[in-house]
Amino acid sequence: MKQNAIAILLFLVPPQALAVELADYAGEWKGNGTYSEKGSSESSGRLTCRLDITSPKADVIVISGRCAAPAGSRGFKTQVTKTGPGSIAGLELSVTKPRTSAGRLNSSGLRLDGADAEGSFFFQLSSPGSGSMEMRSSSTTAKKTEAAQVQLKKTKP
Image 1 (tube, rainbow, N blue to C red):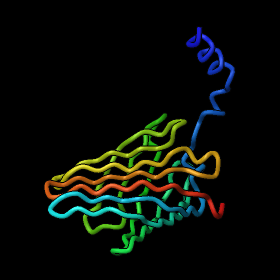
Image 2: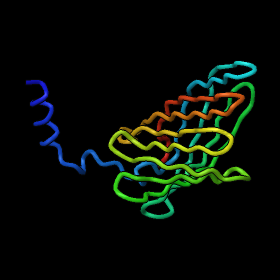
Image 3: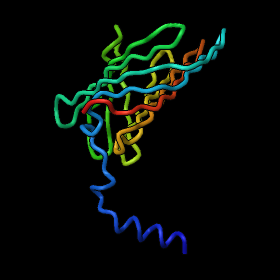
């Protein structure tokens, strides 16, 4: 019975109400969260992040971000391109050796996963529909794993 009720509710919601487009992420976002680093030495703590997300084209966003913790700060810049229905590709622009990633865009948000000779990584943003979203990221190499989780609020469109 419960499954039938859920199916009926989903049927009544128009697909466009569930859809998330890359342009929905555009704006300035700020927030706080936590980070952890595990490897030869372990550390964790609070961090503050700022994202400036622009949409130079209909199916492209550029995420410029900076996160700071008491131990220091780190910036990043990633271009995300819609490559098909529900499919996206990422290109890191802030490093000397750009990494590529692939992922999905759906009603839950976007997620990019990638791997190279040094290790694997992921970047995830929840749906921005309510003016707030969660950012999660992780990078794993043979020597260490870094992870972050941040709650962001939109401060400018």
